[in-house]
Length: 180
Image 1 (cartoon, rainbow, N blue to C red):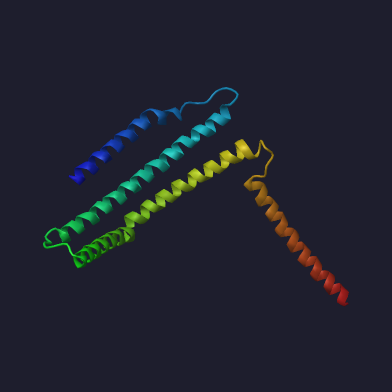
Image 2: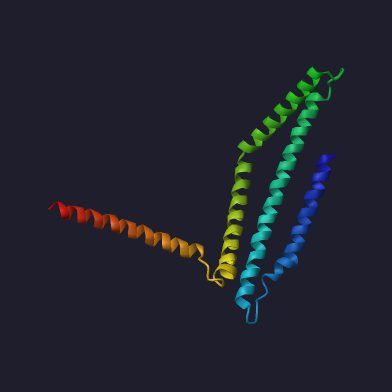
């Protein structure tokens, strides 16, 4: 029964993705016009970035749900034939079976190439979204408010590094000349 529920959830999500791509996703292909054309194009560029992040996130959640269901199935297989009165020792035994089953199931999953590939896709998408957010923040809030951007701070740090290096070199030359 759980599998059919997960399959219907997956089917719904796939339908939703196809519908999005056929409707809202197509809006990003419409060329922007007017005085705010550039800003509109940059905002529209964010839609597919965040949609991709959301899609990968949902797929990751689905994987974790499947792993949780597999772990619970293993617990049920191990405890299904248990009979007798529920004593504190019996509860401890059930708890240990539960911990062992979940730990083993998740260890197997976390060691798999599938998990590593999914995490790689998720992190790549997350970094793209972060980069887009930073660019939009800098362009729409920091620059108009005359506040320093990351690029400005990086340039100042680079200049500070070279100035410190130059001061050290000049100090070394000055010490050398004062010894003579």
